[in-house]
Amino acid sequence: AGAADASGVHVATHRTWLNPDGSGKARLVDPKKTIGSYVGGCIRLWRGASGKSLKDCPPGETVIISEGIEDGLTCALAKPDLRVLCAVSLANAAQLQLPDNVETVILAAQHDTKAEALRGRDKAISALLQQGRKVKLAFSTVGKDLNDELQAHDAQHAAGDVPF
Image 1 (cartoon, one colour):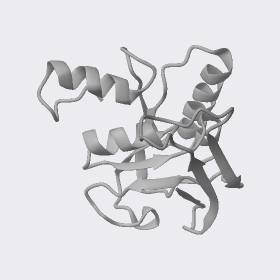
Image 2 (cartoon, one colour):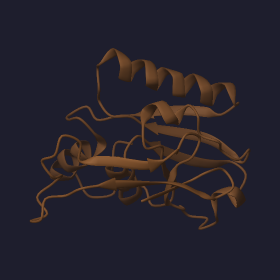
Image 3 (cartoon, rainbow, N blue to C red):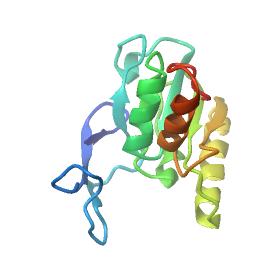
Image 4 (spheres, rainbow, N blue to C red):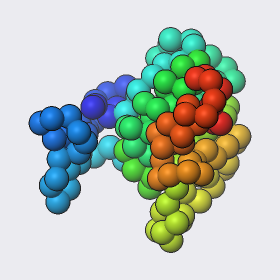
């Protein structure tokens, strides 16, 4: 997946190696790798209801920012009316360069209790608030990520009625 800077220029490529049978990530020391510097950039996964480019998004836009691609795609399926961006890493979420028309950010964080992850999440929230944006936090209460949440929720409720 390609990561772009604020002007839409490709700055990095994120790769994930999968098992040949499609059963998940390859059993490598690190099955994910990003080539290039994505700092301040993001993978633009979904344009939401407007269908417009990020730089031309309508005033008052709400954007979901996920840490990873899988969480972002889960959010796009669950809430197709919202724009979804992948920060590639939680630390980069604080560095994202968003247009002024983005009013609200839903930070789709993984359910991680490690001190480093919590500091990264808090730094991202603080940076977004300092930019004058409203910030909401979404994370799984039943697993490590929102995909786990959606799967558990769909097993109990009608599709489309998601908890984030």
